[in-house]
Length: 180
Ligand code: HQG
Image 1 (cartoon, helix red, strand yellow):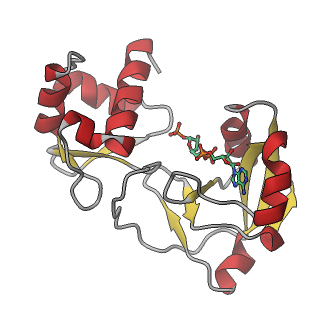
Image 2 (image 1 turned 135 degrees about the vertical axis):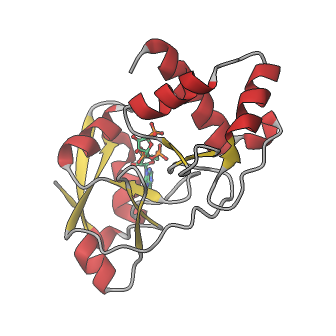
């Protein structure tokens, strides 16, 4: 991902996931905001980018963090929000095993209380070890936990799949966790 687009992506993540009101934006149901409102607000704030740059940023984004609606009139972050918003995610059958990348310092608390969502809406899980490793590596030497997602589902927990392939659930109690 080109440097300029990393900056635009960080800017979008901030305002589409965490602080839309700081740009004078309100997330619509589904997390959507009008593209024109976003472009205008960013320009007013002194961080202008063009419609074409926005499209390229969304299309080349390393984690496909954002999407447009079918008509490219609205844009949203696919997951990762801390503000209250209903993303209209549909429940999905997860694979038997999902993975979570974390770091040593969190382990004692995780074995004690399980995975909790912190300030995001959900706990984020990956369907492959490599992705989980990258997620954990943001914080230090990554440690991978396996989540017994099939059993969780059979025992009543709900799972959602974001548009960019991240598995989401409310919480993972310790009984479903093991070292990968
Ligand atoms: C840890 C990025 C103590 C958890 C990534 C994690 C992902 C606990 C941190 C997405 C805990 C939360 C999400 C407990 C969980 N006690 N620590 N009971 N339960 N934790 O950032 O999963 O670039 O909210 O292990 O690539 O790291 O933003 O979640 O280390 O897809 O698009 O608490 O964010 O994507 O951290 O990352 P986060 P995450 P983006």
